[in-house]
Image (cartoon, rainbow, N blue to C red; front, side, top):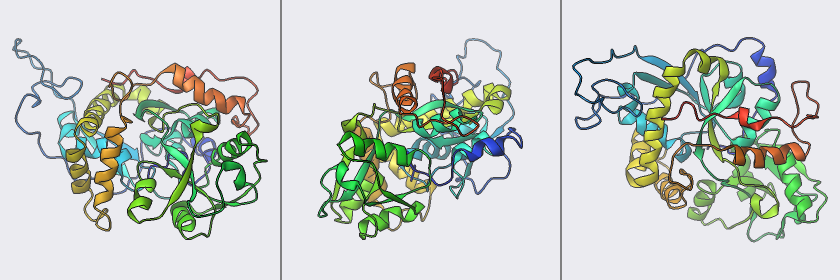
Length: 375
């Protein structure tokens, strides 16, 4: 699922791919279900405005409907509740209402930051740390929306095993996903607990969790709103260590990144896309039952083996208020949070520039994100 800090493929590959061009999206995989017309009611469009609502009818003039624009979105995992707002907006017809044709690029081997930075996807699902590593390395992209407002990843080990604290991970096996930020973050937690930060990493991607559950690996980084719930439903006991308990600041667990050149050329499309997307996540934040039902309906067969998981996850995300900030707002990001967490990564010396060497000057992290396209 949305691999918070955990996805296959080196983000640094984005720099090499970006050299081949940073245009709009190219070939895409199957899209989600076609969006039907919006249901009649107060949100049925007259003229288009941000959020998909009809413009006031006092004036006889109607703004011409813009041509439908295709937007490609690279997923970071199989469909899950980190993606709910996109599927809700599509299933409800809100993208169609805003003249947007959203095409999903299924998760494969290349991570979304690489695809977006190279212009092979217009936008993609990322994390604050993933975007930070990519942009520092030269990827031409920016975060345009916080999907999850707080850290939601933890280091997990088997509850019945000998590992009772992070420093016990010295000399053990970590099942990872191939992202460059995994080892530095894990090492930082182990050292903060008094360990040396020495361990073996095996890159297993989607098999990482089964390796942990079956004892073939000692630790993995799990997502509290998905793998933790899934393990509980399977009666697999986990012991977890929260990053924020060991000196790491809070972070945006999931963000939406878009290609810089695409944003510059398609500002109006981006605003229409974000208006419908925010509306989808607003529903997920306030009505998780309906949101989960629409996520399941939009992805037939995906959840057949465990239909309760997306429902339980949707409830957890809404109860923990992970979709909204302290004011109850969806999507908004702040310089304070970016500077705290991404600044921590810089202070730890783990960020590298386009040349692969550690950065020697602190980036202006306010340029790594923008709220300009939010409704």
